[in-house]
Image 1 (spheres, rainbow, N blue to C red):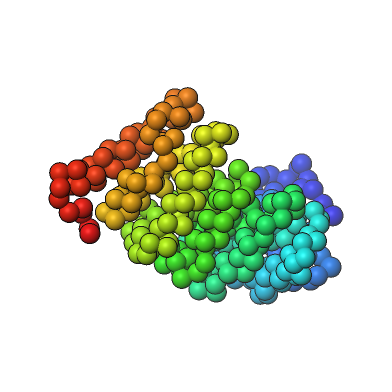
Image 2: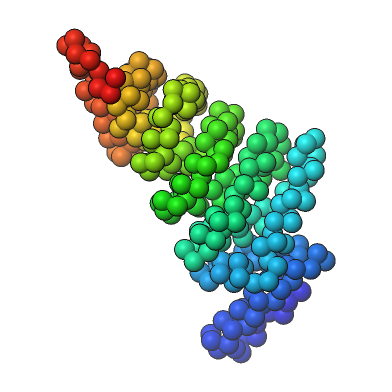
Length: 297
């Protein structure tokens, strides 16, 4: 175990001591017998310069990927233990750090690291180790989309992230559903993402059906945070002419009839988004009502 800094050290000396420990733990990632402790210690760190140190140090990215690949045999059949889940999630926490940092994000995407996480997102076991694994994996993707960088959306649209997130939105835990819906929201808010989702009926209907199921479930078991992301997804879809026309027919009644009035009474932004959505759909229906061809037909 590393020695604690002496109370006689001045702040600069203590900072230097902490930095030396970080360097030591990064070096220890390269060795299987010291890696587990190093993963645990480094996952607690949130230094702004940790990501470049991790990515640019010899063998570290390979060591983190090895931790991920080592778990694959425990996915099918689902035998993942809590200890295994905690260990790999510490590795994922470090990858999330790399994904979030502007100096390492591009290289992270070019190396296609997110694809190594997709097998975890495909799991369906409801046990806590698997749920923790899915949630932490979603956190890495969430950290990417949170940056609002075009290169992130461009990369993700070449992968299977949309159906993977929709599957979790359909059957995951409340927290996993929230992060997965946030990822879909961020994809939709990008112009290329909205165009991608609305390009074919199959893609749009998959998203719309999943959101509709979530609304029905939320009407029975409300969650304001999750509802916020669902409403924002619907509002963004209504910016597309063809999607707006379709939503006029398939938007759940629960979003029209005040079902969520109590849930949203303290959430001004979501209430405003819902009002804007209903107004958009009302305007989108106007041409049909007066005998004109609908927009975008």
